[in-house]
Image (cartoon, rainbow, N blue to C red):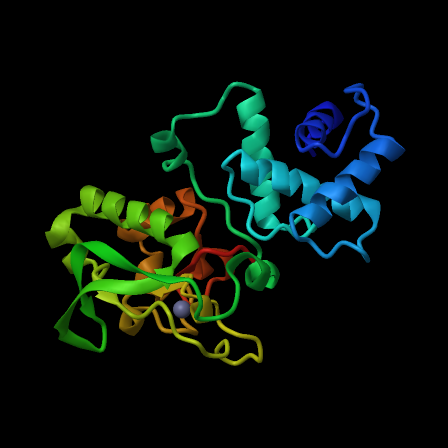
Length: 258
Ligand SMILES: [Zn+2]
């Protein structure tokens, strides 16, 4: 949460608060907060004060150039991420933007993906691959880019570049790590009723023929020692391997926690 003095200063600057900057968020501060939120177009009639206060924090961070997503007074993963970034700035740890780009992304839990990523199939961008991949079920077809969610794009691009640097093209091919089994695909989870993480373009399958859905680590190629660095790199970017987490569907990695 953003400290009360800062919030009061923002309210004062907006012209809605004439009281003291004393760090006591009292009635005048609350009135000013509601006035500011209404002024900038939020329908806050039904919002209780704590929700307005979160929305005010979101507004302040957005004004400071921190990505907060919707200003809705709800603390979702993106708001939490923004608050951490805000705290980093206060501690003087604000890294230059190039460094921010190299921090591991933090992704939501599966049950919160819709709030974090939006509607299935939305917000897609094209990821240009750092090495050519082969389509797993038609290996003569070369893939040079695929569709992925914009919030998963940067970490995936970094992971794939690191994977290429570590393995090199020959080894990638020998290990089947260049066999693309799909990313965006709006469908139900296999054997389940909820939507697959593929529906948001936040899951990628590699080499499905050698990592069948129901195979465990005794059979799945991805569970072998040569593939450990591959999965380590994804995990360092905040992605998870269903194989490592659940010992099935070893082909599948995703930008959402279980
Ligand atoms: Zn998958």
